[in-house]
Image 1 (cartoon, rainbow, N blue to C red):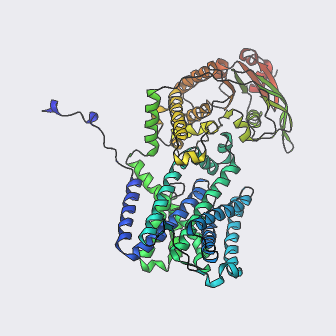
Image 2 (tube, rainbow, N blue to C red):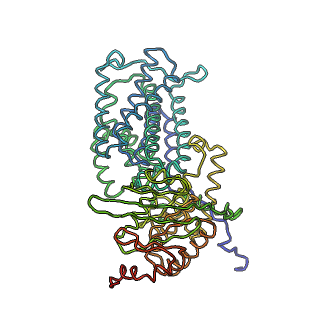
Image 3 (cartoon, helix red, strand yellow):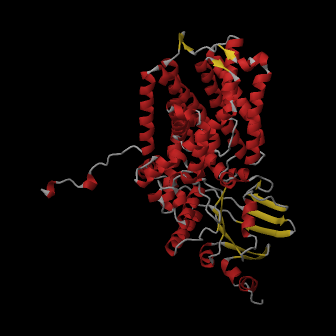
Length: 603
C-alpha cells in the first residue's frame, strides 16, 4: 500500500494567492455587491472609488518617492473646480473638461515641485500647507469664477455615445478607471521607474550611483500625482453635482495623507485598504463619522508604533511569516527559468582607461588629497591601499562624482569626469559599490540586482505602463541577465528574498552583481572583501579574475593585502592624502616607505 502512495514532493503544489491579494479581492467583491444593493451604498462607494483614484497618485509621490505633501486635497479641489467651471460656465462636455482638470492638476503639481527640488522635507511640508490654505482662500475671493461660498451648481454627468452615466453607470466607470490605473501603476512601480523612486526615498546616493536623475524622477512623481488628483476632482464634481469651498477644507487634504500612510506607503494595496478602513468604515459606523479626525490622530500614533508599514505592510509581514510566495519570488522563478532555458553569454566588456592627474580635495582647512595621480590600464585590476584616513574612499567619491575636485583632471577614456555630477558619471559607464552596502530596503535580491541595469533600459515610461512588446522583452532579458549574474556570485537561490535581510557579506555580493549588470566601463569597489568569510573570499577572488578576463576595468580599495597581492595588476599606496608608492604588488609591498606607513616603524 505504501509503495502505491504518491511521493508528496512529486505532487504539484497549489499556488495560493498572497494574503494581500486575497484580502483586497474579497474587499472589492463585497464592495461591488453592496454598491449594487442600494442607492446609499452606491453613492458611498462611488466617492470611495474617486478617493482611491486620488490616493493612488499620492502613494507614488509620498509613498514611493518619500515626498510628504499636504496639498493633495487642494489638487483634487483644483481639478473639481476646473471641470465645474468649464462645464457650467462655458458649456463644455464632461470629457474635455476632465482633460482640462488633468492638465491643471499636472500644472499646479509641477509648480509645487519647484521648491521641493531645493528645500528640505519639513520646509516643503510648510509650503504645501500654505498652498492648501491659499487655494481655499482663492475659492472665496474669485467669486466671478468659483461662485464664492455658494459654489457652482449643476455639474453634468459624463456621457458615452450620448448615454448619460449616472448611478451605477458612473460607479462602474470610475471603478473601471481605477482598475486600469492600478494595472498601469503596478507595471511602473515594479520596473525601473518604481525602483528609481524607491532609491530616491532611501537616499540620493543610491539613486545617483545608478544614473537616476533625482530632479526628473521627483518631477515625474509630482506630475503623475497631480494628474490623478485632477482626474479624481473631475469625477468628484460630476458625482456631487455641486462643488463648494466647504467640500475642500484642510481636513480633506489631511485625509489623503492618512489614507496613504495608514493604508501602507509604497505598497500598491495601501490606498485601497486605507480608503476602505478610514473612509468607508467610519461612514458605515455613523457614530465615528463626527470623530473622524480624532480617529485619524489615534490611528496615526498607534500605527507609527505598532504598524509603521501600514495595513498593507502587516499583510505582507503575515505572508512572509507563513512563507507564501509573493510577486518578487514569482518574478525570480520566471527569471531563473528564462536564464536556464537560454543562458546569457558572458560577453567581453570594453573596459576604459582611467587617468587621474594632480587631483586636490580640501575639506575646510584639511587637505584630504594632495596632488594625487594614477593611471589605470583598460581591462586591469588596480588596487588603492593605505592606512585608515589616507584618502582612499575620498578618491573613489571624486572619481564617481559625489565629491567635486578642487584641482586636477580625471578622465575615463577621452571623457573628462571632473565637474560632472554623480548621475552623469554613472551614465558614462562608471559603477561602484560602497563600504556599507546600499541595497534598497523592501526589494528582493533580484529587484536590487535589476536596478543596476537602470541606465541600459530604453523603453519609455508609457511603454512600461502599457506593457508594450519592447518593454516586456527588455525587462525579461534583463531579468534573465540579473539571475545569471546572481548565479555567478552564488546568490541565485536567494533571488526572491528581501535583500536588506541578508548577512552583510552576501549583501556585498548582491551589490557587485548589481554593478555588473550595468556593464560598466569602470567598476569602483570600496572595500568589497570586508565581512566575507574565507570561503566567500576565495569565490570573490575568482569572480574578480573572471571579470578581468572579460575585459572589465576595476579600481579596488581594499585592506586585505593578501587578496590585493593575488589579484591586482598595479597598486597605488596613499598616505595622508598623498601618493606614497605605486607599481606592481611585489614592488609596492617591499617598499620601506609602505612598511613604515603601515607599521609605524622607522624607514
